[in-house]
Picture 1 (tube, rainbow, N blue to C red):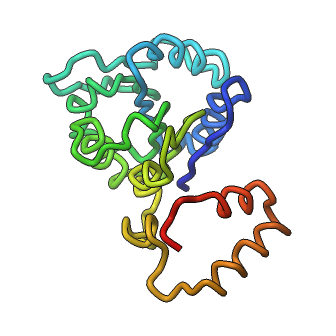
Picture 2: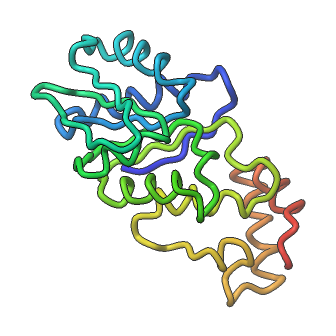
Length: 193
């Protein structure tokens, strides 16, 4: 129901997200939140891959006036700036493109996306660069898909309180077997272990 797709640019994050969202089309309308520069592209891709006619795609264009969803609307595409206008609509499927833009906990766009994600059953986050400089930048993105509140900000940044050097070493060794790239990442991570 909730995932972060963090592939590099050009590997098909948009198509993957649309495929997952289309699988849950009985729970639509779907909201696609993205930077303003990508609104037209998302509209085109929804038509292309999901065969949704443009008449069933609604663009959220106002930053303040609540959007009236017409009957038969399947998809709402809106920039981060327009998310306040759709807060009153209960979306069950949410796609957040370029989710690294919602990493600041005090930013209005982050708070708007958090509100929408809390009410959604399905949340798909997309980013080619989820963490630009520090692993801690991932926390607020992970929080959007962390419906069960398993991860706290402190445990994410500092590790869980019961971790020992031995348990960390064991984690790195297991990661070498199952995900060698992750083992390399864990070994280099500047967390206070």
